[in-house]
Amino acid sequence: MRDARARLAVALDLPDRAALLAMAHGIGPEVGVLKVGLEAFVAEGPSLVREIVASGAGVFLDLKLHDIPNTVGRAAAAAAATGASIVNCHAAGGTEMMKAFGEGCRAGAAKAGRAAPKLIAVTVLTSLDGAALSAIGLAGSPREAALRLAVLARESGLDGVVCSPEEIVAIRAACGKDFLLVVPGVRPQGAAAGDQKRVAKPADAIREGADLLVVGRPITGSPDPAAAARAIVAEIASALR
Ligand code: C5P
Image 1: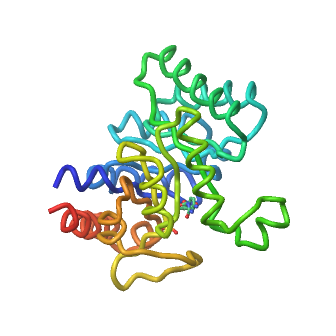
Image 2: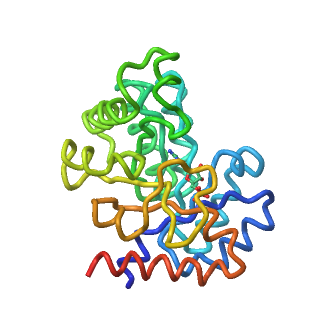
Image 3: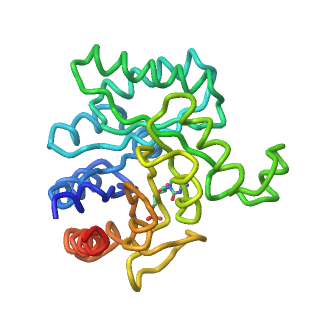
């Protein structure tokens, strides 16, 4: 069961610090990773991340950095110094930026006396469809673009990517078994899809090759978030047997 817990990250997309910390403390023991996103980080800053890390939970700091290499490298160093165990940038920033991201993370973590975090790239935002991609000048379908960016992330020395359930098989085949696939858009049996367009069930995503599932509202919006998290962990465990 321990292994199944490590495969679930809960997105703490909650409006204020008190609610977010209460949720973190309530479900932290049930799951491997808690995800802090841009909204919470901009509002509350690195002290929020340090507080969750100090509670013993692994933190995925989901900042999706994208800027010139020098700026991303410095921001990455500060992100890694919080003690987050996973951090990310946009693969669309290019190879030089992703390399600077990796170097910044390693340097920032070492300076703070922390282990280096896992380095993940965002491929194509799931909010972009084919028309939106061509409007910004990106060739091919979202799936083709995601695969191309995943290969670029691997060649740039990153540990893995965020991808949709539909891209797991192709990216796994192209990038190998050790490349980390972090997969949002996961919905347990009977849960509302919300604004997620392409959803998969936890056990199916794990069987297809996902390493870490990211689930938010089906857990944080449940009357009993710890029980909802345990139920998803049980679904993951069933796929690992
Ligand atoms: O509530 P829900 O389970 O839809 O939350 C999914 C989380 O994963 C959110 O924090 C969302 O921002 C994030 N995410 C996503 N799709 C991506 C990248 C991140 O849903 N492509």
